[in-house]
Length: 161
Image (tube, rainbow, N blue to C red; front, side, top):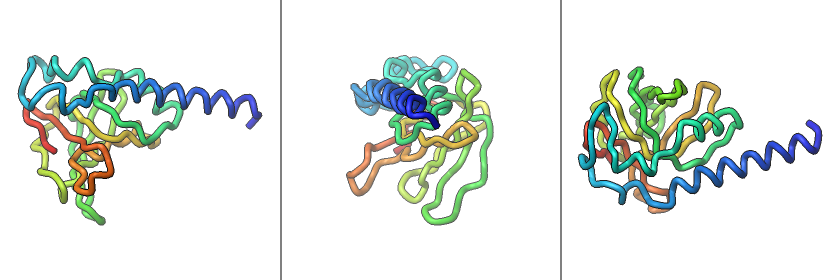
């Protein structure tokens, strides 16, 4: 890779990180208690102002960016078997309005299982990690050690932490 190309890639990654970090200016857990706001087609109007845009997630995917705290809304498109190696994780696929898909890995050793169904709209507040299929959102639970930002999943107006 030429030095100029490496510099441009680094600069773009820093810009994406800064853009996504700006979404954290108001912690989503403070935006709305569970169940508040409109629930038309899965949209919670009180969470929308802090939501990470689909374009920002698309950029993070294209650029291979990881370790981003995000708030996303999507429709459950597939439910997968639990990952039982190490800490147990509930797994399902969420499709964003842009068409990008995200694997959700929700730690059920630390948090309650979310009763998701295909077609259900959910909000996810967690950490985005790049992968070749669109990305993974994990850390969708409280951190018992207090060293990581607490995450959550909201489904049908109920927040699971």
